[in-house]
Amino acid sequence: MTEASQPPVQLPEWVQGTTTAPLSDQDKANLEKARAYAKDLHSLLAYCQAKDEPVPEIPPVALSNNPFLDSSIDPTTLHNLSKVYVGSISPELNEDHIRAIMAQYGAVRELSMALDPLTGNHRGFCFMEYEVPDAGDMAVELLDGARVGNKALRVGRPNQYNTSLLGTLPPTVPGRLYIASVNEHIDESSLRAVFEPFGTLDGLVLIPDVLRRRHKGYGYLQYADSASADMALAAMNGFDLAGLPLRLRKSAIGAALPEGMALIERLGDLKVPPEVFASHEPTVALPHIQPAGPGGAGMGAGVAPPPSGLGNVAPYNAPGSGANATAVATTTPADPSNDTTWLTADSVAHEEGNGNLTNAQQRYSLMQKLAQRGVSTVLQVTNVVALEEVDDELREEFGEECAKFGQVVKVAVHTEPANPPDQQVKVFVQFLDASGSQAAQTALNGRWFGGRQLAARLYDQNKFYADDYTG
Image (spheres, rainbow, N blue to C red):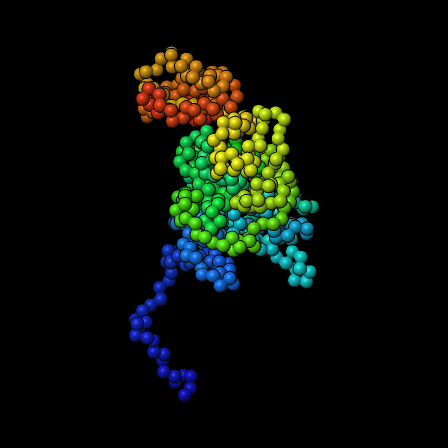
């Protein structure tokens, strides 16, 4: 029988009459999630098979390296926006060195270096992908033009990077900041204590590594207003906390915040053998990085280099790994008022058990460091009294109360009848230094006064000097 005369193929009865419809956007998103889940499960399955051990039951969210898995963001879009190109890599650096460098700005999902098939040496460039686009933006801003070894790195987006995809993301949140390079011994409550003085925090999450039961060294802060976020960004970007310089920038992701470290407690101990992760732990020292310089390539607009270089960080482990405790400074300053040894991971873990900054000396040391960073010396307090209750004694009362926290320079009372009742009366207190404003903010925020709960936050001192009390 010739090919032309062959009878038509008979399809099964349940297939006949059906048509193949194209995948919807939701179908594509579900498919991408399934692929990511299968990929992340591979190393665990391989380990259990080699050891002839049963595979533990692990929910997909525990293995996913997409913190916005439950959001409306298309996973493919998130992948594409998180990719980075790194070029002009010195010959003496290898893949582990580059991974260590890039991990300062967020968790690295994938990294591959192009190798010369004849020599086996790398060809001076690589492609990588972070878990979130914010990390890629930060790396491009801070590393492009920075010298590592005998070359200046070229860090940017790959040619296939599609900027139009940014328009498909949920609208950005004005008060949201991306934060990276967080020491593993600093937990969410400790980080909240550090950042609350700048304004009301609507959310703060560190992205969890559920299997290792620790955070990944990055997360998100969300303030109630953009002014507070701007102040925190200006004061804390590059601030040395527990031996690591914090990295902050405005976030480009507007989806709902992930669950954070609460996910670890909700899922419980998954009892995954630690050997599964041994091959993924960095083992090389972080190379010395010479920033491109303020205003130059690689630093980004308005981003100052950290107070101290990165070359003193020895043997490197990602912010989420336990070896950070040995990588921080251990020398004790001669001046007790400037003693920052409490910031080392060892001392935090020893004194607080779980990285909580609750010790009075710890808080005082933090205030001293913030004062050196130019944190505002002006405190704004609202919801003080009703508009009709304002009198001359109010200013004196606040002056006397705030003198308990530091030397008071000036007290001003400002009224705005058109505002909501809790914002009609504003009291501004200027201290001699930032340690006073920090201490007063901590003590007064949330305190009850005459049947009202006070709201205290740091105020832009430049506006205060210009007699602008409308903020």
